[in-house]
Amino acid sequence: MRKILLTVICLVSLASAQQDPMLKYLQYDMDMISPATYKARRDSVMKMIGQDAAAIFYSAPERMRNADVDYLYRQSDNFYYLTGFTEPNAILILSPKGVKIKITDSTSQIVNEALFVQEKNPLAETWTGRRYGTVGATKLIGMQFALTNDKFKSAFSATMFSGIKYLYAPSITSDVSGEIRNLLSPLQNWIDNVKVRNSKVELRDPSAMVHTMRIIKSAEEIEMLKKASEISVTAHNQAMMSVEPGMFEYELQALYEYSFLRQGAEYTGYPCINGAGENSVILHYNTNRKKINNGDLVLSDCAAEYRGYSSDVTRTYPANGKFTKDQKEIYQIVLNAQKAAIAKMKPDVAWKEVTAVADSIIENGLFALGIINAKDGKQFKKFYNHGLGHPVGLNVHDVGQSTLAAGMLYTVEPGIYIPETSQSVDPKYFNIGARIEDVILVTETGNKNLSEGAPREVNEIESLMKKKGIGNQPLK
Image (cartoon, rainbow, N blue to C red; front, side):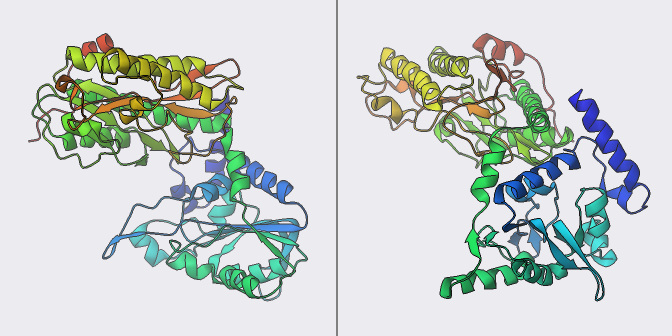
């Protein structure tokens, strides 16, 4: 039913867009979060800040990679959460009691929300793609009111003289650069003046407020994270079917990224990690240049971002399709810890309780193998030196809270990493790194694994790896 409703909303939006021949090109995708959802979020912010306040949010800056090449643009999390708007150089004003904004030299309008966007520019759009403009922002994004971003200065002045007591605005940090920084100069000048004189308006940061809203995911957000996880699962399965000794780590990276894009993901959630052999023990290894050898264990931590929502999935598998006895021993400890931790997850359970379950199993497992010589709560951390997991959402390390609740999504990713520099460890365990990570949705009655489609059991992995994937076909 949720998918049907979402499709109907998008079809209505597309129908209205097609009344304008330019607008129809701006909405190719049919599975976006509805404008009504973004409007409800903005209304919630206005309710929380109250009638005596206004709030300002702004888009992420464009970032230069080198010379005249920019990084692929990615919108800031909070701004996207409130608008669904993916273009740079945009600013949002929210005013619960309304602010009088000048439209032309002779006309004004009192509005509760206004989005300031890039002006339509046919020449620029020929080079960098079509822009929504003010009409697109109202008809497709569902904003109450939209103006070109050069009008923000006068709108900001009107907001500050509208009788508010509080202005909620995020800090303009040093990494906010380029055109958006210039557009925000009226806000920055006011912030600077607040520091040297008493102002009748108090500055507050709205970030924590929006973060609180983002902790529990809506049904639409869960659908996006489910889709991102399913895309990631397909890629992991293809990697396990495709890997073979003699390949390079970057070939696996290419397979993952190809699979993500082919399934409609816009980005990777984070740089793809494909560590083989000695590289499997490096937590965030992403050089991906080593040749994969027979007998190597491959740790692949790769996931897709879909419509702004990032999954986070890791699988560990033998390059030749068969775990050695020593690899299997380490891997099974990690799997047992993950399964026990997931089983613990349900509403009202503290995350530290989930963590304690995994810690205990890993510590006992390493002690039983003689890799540590005491269960003192410290030694095992030499080989498992990160947390059990984290929330996911608009950010791969998203906002969360200490006690689980229905609608939260957490990764569960225990691991064991034994570098060849480990002292007093049998060398047969050297360069074995194993991590297993899944995205877990907390439900009203327990939990659901959104990435369970990629096998985790040893026999299931080995069985899948007997099949051939698309990643080791020669390029001709």
